[in-house]
Image 1 (cartoon, helix red, strand yellow):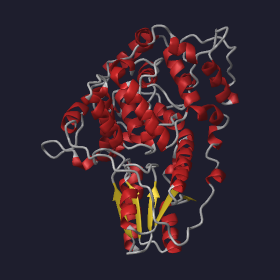
Image 2 (image 1 turned 90 degrees about the vertical axis):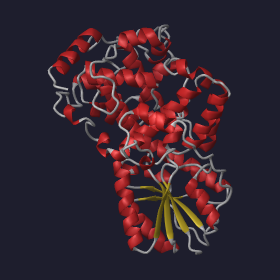
Image 3 (image 1 turned 180 degrees about the horizontal axis):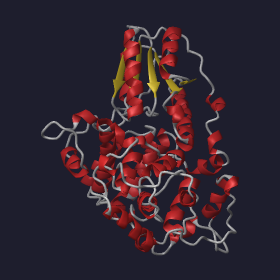
Length: 471
């Protein structure tokens, strides 16, 4: 066959270890890479939608460097793809799989319709190490607990990453491309885009540099340093994995090399990669995890579901009076990122001290996180709330005061992100007030708030509510 292949690019903005592009290059057929702001991607929250657009533009530049290009389109995925097939005479549409329910439903419908049109529709791996249906218990079921999952996969052979694609055959004529600058993807970020942009690490080259620097200098102390929010002790690769700017196989093999070299934190790093795998495993097998309580017995729990309450607004604005919580929420708003230890603290505080439904937090993170991933976000929130798989026990309530003493004893983290009451606030702390909506009407000159719920009071209230429930 000599008809073109349309490579529908979604969360795989890389030339290295890209099974779809490698297969397309090997076919010898003309290749037309396409990015579609479709019914799934167009529904992302403000920060992840904007970050995805930046990643797509960086990938377009990489494709240009090898003599190809990325076609940008906006609209319903099936309608756009059918239009491109008609315009280019393409005989195939290929894409890399993702596993959340919304993406699976879209892809299933697209595949069925294109096959009905007589067009080859083929999906490829690449977003995870192991396809969700490839990892089974001894009885053939899916895994519901992380530790057995880890034990099952930790010694499995993971193929080496594929070499980078260096050329793609071009079609005789390129279809018309839209200009993504006209889509206004930064609009929902308002004035925050200018603040967040320097904190982002965009593109395949930046992702590879980030992995290299982590393995060379930080992975040895990763087991300890990853819990210290004031220390740059994590890989920060979640952002790049989310958009496929680096493959999980590249990260895995780098971790294995570090482990074989005797770097102590490497196994913990590998476990975190598998934690991400486990999230996608569950999102595929139990798709309701992203929209409702994974454990149905939590459906009747009396969480507050009103996101407009004073307590929720204080949490969103980093004005709860709990310094660990507030510092974390401000870090999120300025950088599009939040330290993992801090994510657990703010989630526990919202769902337990404030007794608010985890979906309120899940939705806020979906708006603000540059590394937002539907599977990881849902599993993290349900783990913290107690309603999810392998969750923290419902009676475990993180104390944000003692957690601060343990993980930020010198208050370096909170001093970086909280400006109120300081004669010379940190630049990062002041950036928060440049990024927030003006209608929040708060400034660095305000007094720092008293706790809206004291640590001990919130814990007692949560435990009393749990005791009234039959778990």
